[in-house]
Amino acid sequence: MFVPDTFVEKHFGSDNSLSIFFAAIIGISLCFLTEMAIPLLRVLIRKGRSMGAEKASLIGGKGASLPKMAIVSSMLKPKAVTAFVGFILAITIIDGYIFCFLF
Image (cartoon, rainbow, N blue to C red; front, side, top):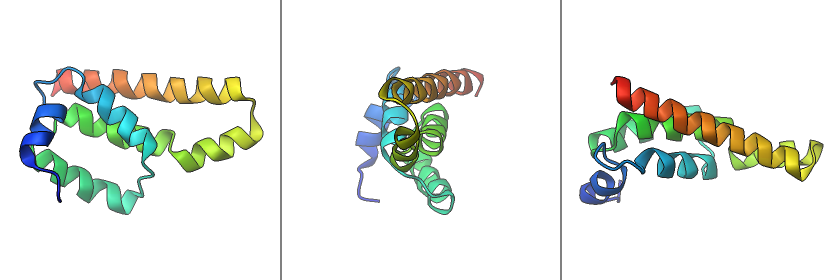
């Protein structure tokens, strides 16, 4: 990949307390295919990204990706879409911190 190791370690490493939050936001904004997510996350782990940040990216990308938000927004009101994305984001961040704490 074209992302320097030092950038990944500084912003998404285990010593940065906001890495899981940033990983969840990035994961939600990306649309991960299952075939693409695992190799991509594996490379980022080798570059120094924490396991909690990786789990947050994976859950956020699968739970509330942009195509899913488009489908949900076509069926629900804006407040419900905001609640849906907020719930996915909160669960993703909490789960990432728990996973990072345990492992």
